[in-house]
Length: 284
Image (cartoon, rainbow, N blue to C red; front, side, top):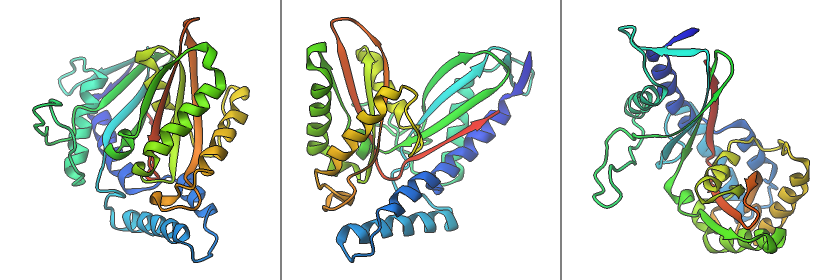
């Protein structure tokens, strides 16, 4: 059994909070750059400003966006790992991550956006609790992936319980109509996470997990690669454009995650991420 001190997890998570909020992932930077045509258009100007903002954030270590988001963590923890505190007692991964978020959002002066109750609206003042999803795997390693999710793009999310008769065209219409309605509110160019299958409770998580893929990566289920491309092309025909002001692109990528489902059901969830797609994976 491999022992990992909880303080190591706490410190690494705190660093991760600063890292992803200051540094735009390279695949996002490259994708935005690829659409710059130097044609003096409004969309070109906005794309250049996005890249300039990324450079300033990296150099000065300030947040890419004032909305530093809900802290989402996707954790894979080996069954041969034991987390221990300073006194040698067993600790759990959830409390260690939340302590790291509290430390990180405080240390790096990141905006605290979490309220303790949806109606009372009292700020927790350290951006906790984080949304933490844990899977157990074989081995003695811990993989932690963080995604900071802003409120504007999260509010542009949708879930619909389709039926098998709706088929792919029903899914496509749901996606296009949803983006027509809210895409401009999500600070495009957007990244689209699409979950298909599972049930009401799990399909939204599928859509959020889809956002963890890097631009240019292929779907592990080959049949969905052309569908991702088809949706991307259709979304970019909408002419919503960067920051909703028209032109190209409206979306940088579409990623699909699927799961087995009931014979009578076809749940579909859409989780949109803004151009500031702040995510990173670490291994302990």
